[in-house]
Amino acid sequence: MIPVTKPYLPNREKLNKYIDGIYERNWLTNNGLLVQELTCRLQEYLGVEHLLLVANGTLALQIAYRALGISNCQPGERPEAITTPFTFIATSSSLKWDGVEPVFVDIDPNTWCMDPANIEAAITPETRAIVPVHVFGNACDVEAIGDIARKHDLKLIYDASHAFGVKYKGESLLRYGDAVTLSFHATKLFHTGEGGAIVFKRKEDLERARKMINFGITGPECIEELGINAKMNELQAAMGLCVLDEMDENLKVRADVWLRYEQVLGKTLQLQLKHQSLGYNYAYFPVVFNSEEEAMRVAAALKEHGVQARRYFYPSLESVSCLGAQADPPTSKDVASRILCLPVFDQLAQADQRTIIALIEAELTL
Ligand SMILES: *Cc1c(COP(=O)(O)O)cnc(C)c1O
Image (cartoon, rainbow, N blue to C red; front, side):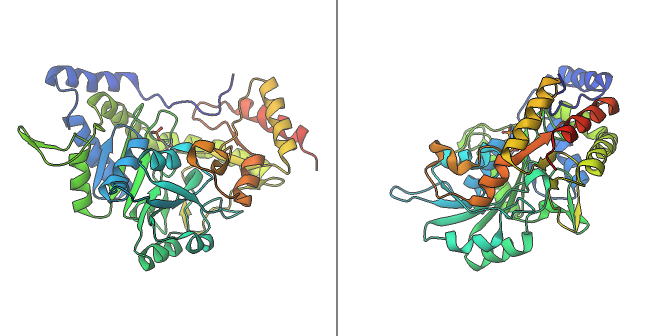
């Protein structure tokens, strides 16, 4: 079976050395040396400040909502956040879980990111935040969305789970927003097994979040505010340090895979339109077919040959009933119905990739 993705496994000896250190120090969690080291190295690698490591990308979102005062509401309040239906469920379910109603606005048909033209009509007196997603590592229209957030005094949190290392206008894309969240799940480009991070614009928000991820405890006998457990541990950080060391090589191999797909499939099928000033990370290869029927035919043909193509992101989230019924966003629904993500990982053999491309071409109704 060729999966749609495979976790990146770094050099084993190096990981063993880090684990030896963990044994020597007998320090497994609570802001250990490796978590501190990974924090510094990620800030440097990504070109950001105020980065906080957490246990996973979903908690990163939840802590960001709390730290920015979006989800902690008084009785009778019913806060809302404007977000996109074309994403992984966690972007919205984390809002709902914390008592914030996700309100969907439709995406742009070419970039598949939230269309800023749809945002203002969705703002109500209850709106507290905008939560866009840099979907598949593409950049949202950060200038237009930033202007709307400022004009209406809304908090802006980007879910950048797919945008590790992505550059925008030559700088980190993570510099836009009051907070930006990352997921370091095993299947993500950079990973710590499970893990995540938040990059805050302001230091005071980082410091509030730092307390929150450790139960609100600030001293041996001091609990300052309501918190939760969202700490990253030393084993996670050890994995991250090893993966980060090999990041550039990993990126190079993935870029080759990505470009081989693009060269052939980009001629006949719709690919995501990347922002002009984007430094892309080649994390996913999503492709939109001419019809849902064609997409399903391709998926079945690939499956028959042991290749897994996944319907990311499907279904469009307005149809997920536990999030609360919403009006249809037609573009998101349409793109979701016709999209497949193809296998991209560092060990994908060129011969296997040629087979995948040939199988797809054979199913296309041109
Ligand atoms: C993976 C992902 C998350 C969730 O991250 P976890 O680390 O798995 O909790 C959230 N949002 C998006 C867009 C993701 O792809």
